[in-house]
Length: 178
Image (tube, rainbow, N blue to C red; front, side, top):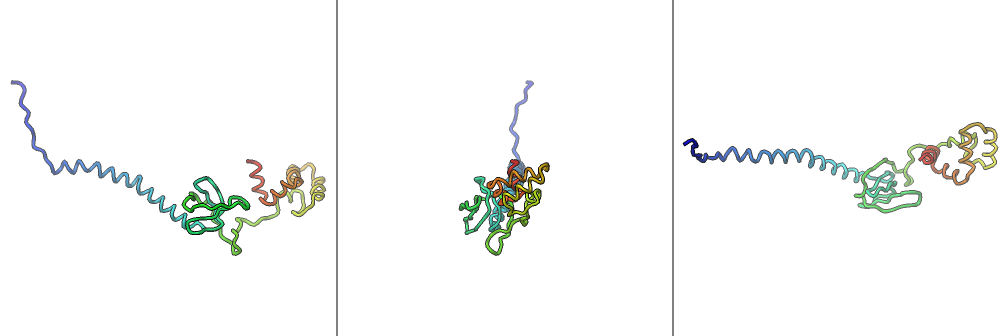
């Protein structure tokens, strides 16, 4: 006969069990370092950020609202979204703190930089409390100046002038461009 009979071989149980568990342990270690540990670190940073929120901070909520914190009350915060527009939000809905503010002694947040007289007033050579006639007189003397033309267009309209005075030069110009 050309075919030899096959016989069962004895199994070694000690080493093969360890070899079967090694891939599972390796997968768990990889998952721990690539998924679980970074997520725990991110949650810890989020918790620390929420605990550090104070009045005057500019925050973004999970709904996309951007506002300044006007009060913190336990698990709730008060946000000012615009002038005289305030809402209550749950502290846990904050996803980002954009700017840290320092509360002033009087209860209002300090501005980032002091306001100075606007560039439009400087371009026309007038003071901020100038009348409409004074604006027209100053513009008449600076007809060819492009900055004076832009300043005149803004300051002669009472609505634009009020907006310019409340926002400041840089913010007003950036909002016009967008």
